[in-house]
Length: 418
Ligand code: NAD
Ligand code: ADE
Image 1 (cartoon, protein in one colour):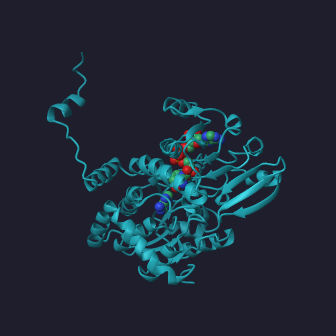
Image 2 (cartoon, rainbow, N blue to C red):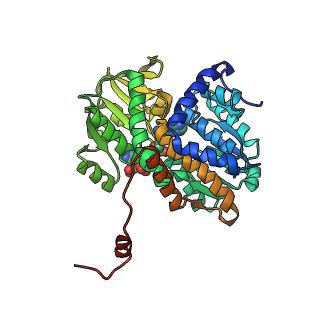
Image 3 (cartoon, rainbow, N blue to C red):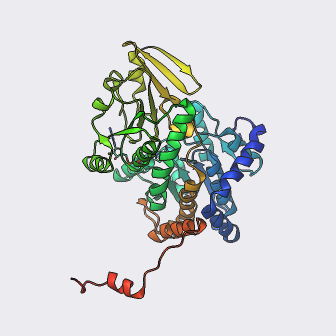
């Protein structure tokens, strides 16, 4: 099969939306212009497993301009924008294997379809391509120059592979660039998670009690934005430092056991498993809304919730109402999958601009430095982070000061004190 999308007839709508996103991706556009002239990825096969969105489409177009033969599948069964997938195939001639709502078997068939192209470079959001290569498709590893990884959970999985001495090629942790997680994880997840919850439910957040589980990069952004919409925010954590930070940022901090009976809306962003469990569901108010914005759908213990329920039904497309035996109902959004990408459109293009500038420059970095790299996890050099930040500032029309010669000297000295 050359590609597998829902309907090629959706392409016109997808193309318009890709162009709309492109307007807010000035840094990626600049990289694309340079790639067109210099062709740093010429002749390379690049297989990507990313959320199929308008922003990803613009990344694929930039990589193709750089000479790569790109092919794309989804990094989550529910995040695909079918019109974008159609436009990539029809208008940009980039094969896509992704359909919103695909089952697990199809999801893995699509992953294997992009791997069948025998990639030189893989691009992951969650490490599914790399783990498939290290599991069932080991034969492909020898041909891979390197891989890039978009998200925190993917980097955690890959570090575990590297620590066990099993990693078969170099990996670039794009997530760990400052111009990625400072902005994408914090501001992107903060805004788009609320967007997903609001589109799914139309709930009023002002005056609600909003429980954020996990105060990492994503949780911080989410707590801040929920407060901005007038919610009373409670944070739960397992790390004393993060908990202290949340407290000093002005949020209430308590164990989930105590927050469970107080919350109107609960969101997990921990990258961990079984965060909201049976004992928490049992204490929730009637009508509580529960969602996840962490990478995998393991943060809410849905099997336990189902076990406690006498009935489960779907309402408003993406809301599952669990009627508990205690007479109360709990509402789960998007089956516990990434709520911002399942119920809304994911992060705004303006932040994905920086994340995907890192991806594009990451692919170029792997090609340039591939032979010198070991089978380890790398981050992009600091100069690239600085360059992306400078270009973004320029595009936003923001100027900053420069160090004077005297300041440069002062900062490099130890002699001057009181
Ligand atoms: P992070 O490591 O910065 O933060 C995770 C936080 O969760 C940590 O502070 C950790 O102490 C805390 N935590 C772990 N277990 C917990 C538990 N049982 N209860 C409460 N807190 C707990 O990671 P991050 O960058 O914020 O990413 C979080 C998740 O979101 C990851 O799965 C990541 O891949 C995903 N992510 C999603 C999107 C999106 O578009 N939805 C974007 C970026 C990252
Ligand atoms: N991850 C979060 N938001 C995204 C988006 N808009 N496109 C691709 N990946 C994303």
